[in-house]
Length: 410
Ligand code: NIG
Ligand code: FE
Image 1 (cartoon, rainbow, N blue to C red):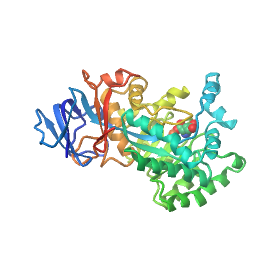
Image 2 (cartoon, helix red, strand yellow):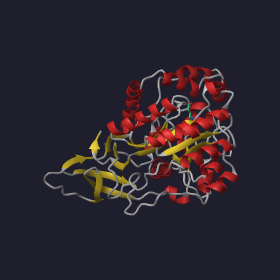
Image 3 (cartoon, rainbow, N blue to C red):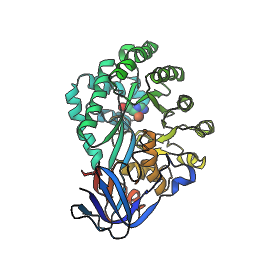
Image 4 (cartoon, rainbow, N blue to C red):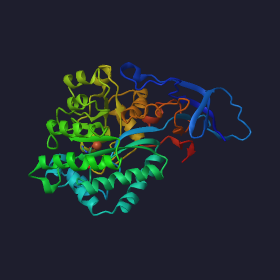
């Protein structure tokens, strides 16, 4: 039985032969079909077109009432598996402490690590499941989720098993990232290199043994891990087929972008501190620059120079960074609005950044991110709108009417 969507006002990002990503000037354009229909079969996009559709007798039909249909969001950077929350630090931040100051006194990531170590695997799953359901309701269909609040082998594995269970028990398409090098745990405070050795010699082989991760990440930044340590960790991961996706240049010109490109990272993420050198190195690479404007908003950081990236003919992906410390929201409609308001991106630029380029940033460009026959039927049906630009313009209010994942209405 097919599921047929009729009376689609605009069908956004249709492509017969999708490109892996869009960059530079191309980011401002999107293929649109007007007064369209779309048919889904066996969880995949089957076919679509303009005009009236004549459904088969046994088709299930949804009337979109002139709303838009677009690919569901591809959120390529989150930490949505965590225990408890950190709103007490949020108050410290309001009183003037910086993210780094909170981290230095044992708060921040270490605070989440302590909570997580006291939480059972099942409880961690039960706490994370509502966040997964929440992002589905807000239009996300594919998501990358990182470990990194374990900081010892047992708890890192616990997080990664929870991520695996989320992918088995929800309709989200999930990619998983091992982020053992997220922070140095308290018991290694005076032996950071000892912790790096633990990541390399014990954690990476254990993660690979259970086949729990697609990617490997390092927080390569001032006060966290150095470029030299990042090099060693990424090399060790590569031996097990783990592809880098790294946290880079959030707090300073850390050399993280260069390290990422050197190791053929799928993406380098954050990028608040990016200058000419970083732009030149990214150009000509297959590494997706990924901006997380929610973290800049929440921490009061400067915003990444998205316009300079696009003017340098680079692609840009936008992701939520959903985590308890720097961006406790996985709302991609809001991320699009921030892309426009703060990063000065155009409506279609943000749309490409949260769909096609986000899919590439997690290695899902062949199956997600555009309306293409054979791709996974992960779709958003919007309320009727005057044009796509209304969606990010109306910040803070959702224009989503229905979410379809794997061809099923959520
Ligand atoms: O992407 N920058 C490093 N890691 C996360 C924050 C994690 C946390 O504070 O819990 C981020 O912003
Ligand atoms: Fe992050």
